[in-house]
Image 1 (cartoon, rainbow, N blue to C red):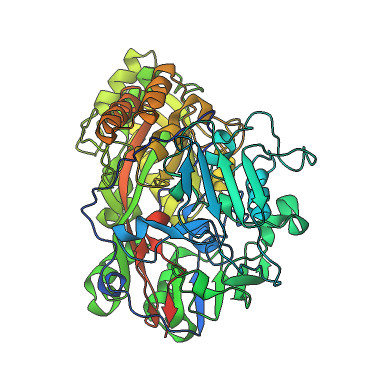
Image 2 (cartoon, helix red, strand yellow):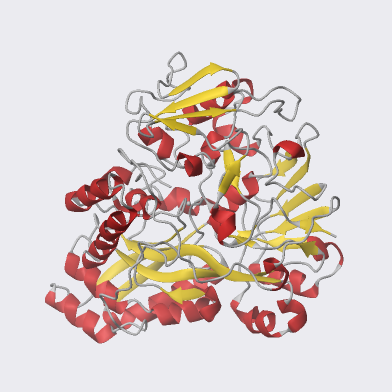
Amino acid sequence: MSWSPTRARTRLPALVGLAALALTAACGGSTTKTSSGTGESAKPVAGKKGGTLTLLSSADFEHLDPARVYVTNSSDFSRLIYRTLTTYDNKPGLPGTQVVPDLATDLGTASDGAKTWTFHLKPGLKYEDGTAITSQDIKYGVERTFSDLLPEGAPYFNTLLVGTGTYKGPYKDPKGDLKGVETPDATTIIFHFMKPLADMRYAAALPTTAPVPKAKDTGVKYDARPFSSGPYKIANYTRGKSISLVRNTFWDPKSAPAIGAYPDTVEGLFNLDGATIDQRLLADNGPDQTAITDGQVQPENVVKVTTDPAVKARSITGFDNSVSYTAMDTTKAPFDKLAVRQAMEYAYPKFAARLAGGGSSLGDFANSVIVPTLSAHKDFDLYPTGNKGDPAKAKQMLAAAGFPNGVTVTLGSSDTPSSLKVSAAVKAGLAPAGFNVTIVPIPTAKYYDTIGTPAKQPNLVNYGWIPDWPSASTVLPPLFTCGAIKPQGNNNVANYCNKEFDALSDKALATTDPKAADEIWGQMDQMLLKDAVIIPKLYGKVLSIAGSKVKNTYGALPFGGEVDLANVSVQ
């Protein structure tokens, strides 16, 4: 989506550094009313082995190191090169949000009130060089997430496991041992959490549980060459330009029924202009007949894609399970004042921004953080403007707050043409309200690294979020609790710290009745808007196209509605 890259997952998701996040014993569930795909995207067919799949992208992956992956496109792609204890099922729509065993024989066995989880590995699992995958390798992969050199990944293990607060990771503490993970033998791994983690089956699908052999670990350089435990291995990777995957001959497809891995090779081409990607896919010539993109259709091509039957038949559409919002840094002037933040709520031109980004195909207007697919979602609108903004009211509020001449603010924007176009529309829409906006372009591949550093982030930043699994417990605590604020890899980009909010979060996480927990999450969602912390913009939708010879192009909800790369086929 052109508002900003979407975080998480599964950021995956695909999400944060919390002081002590414990998950409720019964997650909220899902109540979606949308489908995940039209045309062939809603009708998976039997995959055909062979051929080359090409991924056309406007930017390189932010990270491929499993300790650092927390953005949807990286999470989707990572399933091609490494495996996790569990993984998402290979089905479109809501069935695809359910997890199945991957490296593990089952979804794990809980004990001690869900504070202890035991997994056993399938026999015969191997890396790309034929060596055995062991439980110790999975433990080492988890230990790496404790390193301050690798801060961007999912937070659930390095904030919940026994040993958090004392263990500093294998680089600073090479002789140390993470007490929260036991490996009594090469095929058994036991996790000990400080608080119940009833949804461990979902957490085990995060890249955090991918095995990393210690002998192959290259620290921060591992990003450029993760060692493969999945269906493909990296043949060549030139950051910012291209990546090439070939089959891992030691991968056993019988042990991974949720992964199709049909193409013989996968090629990724980066830093392509969005208009160029559309042009190539619309023309549908030569190698581009077996190409897909991880981006949205450009605004100028939306009408053609949605009305031309031949093109529409190879489009991918549907709800992407995300919410996009603009966060105000509550620790920096002028947004350290509630009245200024509330004025921004009234001033923000949602309609103009969506129009600049491509119109209604981008998504439905949002007034909350919790997406409609979660049972904790509640309909409310604390700042009614018809989504068009109310500059006169906002200007009056600024004057009453002591800013009769308005305020100057900075707006961080991904540097793609489509995102800059949206930012320009926002700047123009805010000017009549008295907000003088300076746009700060940020390279897309560095977007989250930049705004995830509070000392560097602009006053306003665009953010997107997808629940790590179907519960508000993977939305509000990771994004808005005090413990989520980090000096690097920060996902609480509003830098919001409210002890009352945190107390409600702890209460919801300890509530085993899902309906009662949902009531608390809904109350917290409204609290965020009363405090005017963020401006919800869209519940996102996907609109992209694929080449005519690409099959199984359904949008995977756990990966933001992006094509499930593990199951596409070229014919």
